[in-house]
Length: 454
Ligand SMILES: [Zn+2]
Ligand SMILES: [Zn+2]
Image (cartoon, rainbow, N blue to C red; front, top):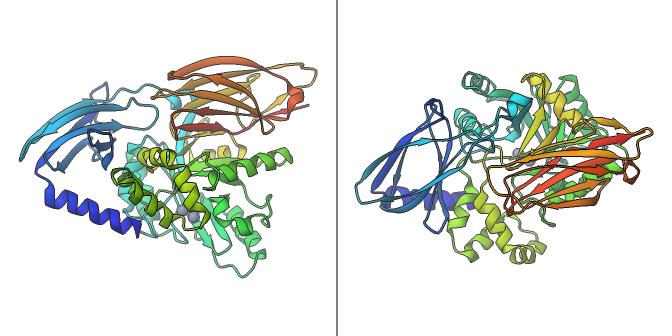
């Protein structure tokens, strides 16, 4: 319903009112064309339209005459460039934009990806090639196609490797008892379930294909969730792009806290963050353009539970910011640490938790030289050193260090894009360390645990 309404609005806006054209090319500092994301905003910064360059870095957008802010980006490792432009009736304007790369995490073994994406082969709005291009435009190195109960997109998806994306085949095994991503499959996984025992069969079928099983948006299915065998699956999606992060009541916060409990019970299940994108032009971004009551009523339709009414009212500003931030491939994403970018290495790193999750900030954390998913031998050590490097293309607010589920340190980094720090950890205070980074809502990142054992 919401999609149909926003599509209609966009259609009317673009095809009845447009009168001017902005076109151009985006290049990097070595003059090579860059596949990037573009957004057109009103002078008041409401997002009007999202688009992407073609494979050769070129774009052409029709717009009604008027003043716009054009925002060009390519994920968290590139600068975000914004400039304002005035388009008069029937004008054609051409711009050349150079986008600077700020960081190169691949050069130190970190590769970002999204393990939850939909296309027209299930309920997504775009074809496979458009989704692959949007992945590259948002700076992803690898991505998993996970249409509901089908792998029909396989052949087209694998072609994306030509363009520098590592495509991995997946399936969102969609059952009345929950949604489970099978990541790295070679054939279809049977999704039919009669009762809870069939879930064990699904996890076992996934594992027989040497694929990874992920519980998706667990708190959407919370009635069944408590009964699931926690050891039956490989990873848990604690952050799904379809809901705002760090807000009680939308599922992601509940999933994170539940995961902390799992870790405190001694089970090493690792977390992922994925967009679950169904529309690379971000259905949500148009909400930022609508009046507040319309935004709230559309969100109410998306989340119809009665308690959501108050929740939406109480969190209106945060939800608006989240809506404006958009839901694109890679928002959020999981960065994995690899020796070499291959499908099997990505799967292994996801399961081992050699990863951090983010919608922007880059977080490199180590305790006594060990990173996420690794274990520090604390025997005879009274204190350990947590070294942190945080990098970002926008200004951040704070770093939070969590030990065994409790906040043990907070660092104010308001206004900073980069932060290097080292701090002491007492191994007696708990057996795992996680680092969170917060920026202006909803900017956020969280690592998988670094384990402390003796
Ligand atoms: Zn799902
Ligand atoms: Zn999905």
